[in-house]
Length: 265
Image (tube, rainbow, N blue to C red; front, side):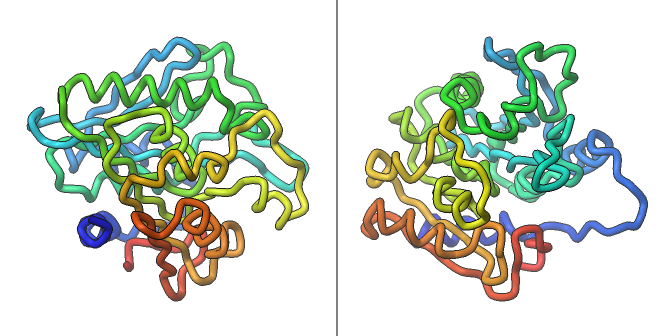
């Protein structure tokens, strides 16, 4: 099963290279990624947050694959948080846009892409210390359920980039229909990562590694970049060790850092 999941991820990483020296408009960049892939932008009201999604559901009797974005622009420096966490280049969306599966959904994290006026709860804590808080995960899970209802009875496959990898695990731990988890540079042990960088812990957030036993029976592959000094390969290996190696595998990709051009692989 792990081998099938691994093979299935290969085309997901064949992204078109994006370059340029001018500042990008995040929304325009997202639309440019999504339009050729026929991923339609929509808003999903989950109660706590209104989330931005891009979706293509063309064969309801086939599995649903959901991509989850990373943390985006959470911090401007070690001490200065951003005022808007929307990613300038949405790696999770770039992965989703290259996926040829019939049912593909991309979920931005709370407060990304959606106008702040539509999200009165949005505030700096929700992309810093509370980025993996229970109400954040419940909101993301509710969005997954909304799209899963369009593919009734079909399995759900989760793919998460960076902090989206943690969200994928935390969602999977709450569901019974998830059959695979794939993460790319996934922050699967935020307590370890925060200690590594000597930054404050996040007591109001859930830590994915604490839920490892609850997803141990789900097929999963966790990809890391060999040159990633933000979320080094040791993080994925720690998570796999915590789940057991029966269904989980950690793979290190040579030459790549956290924000490298994964499209080359």
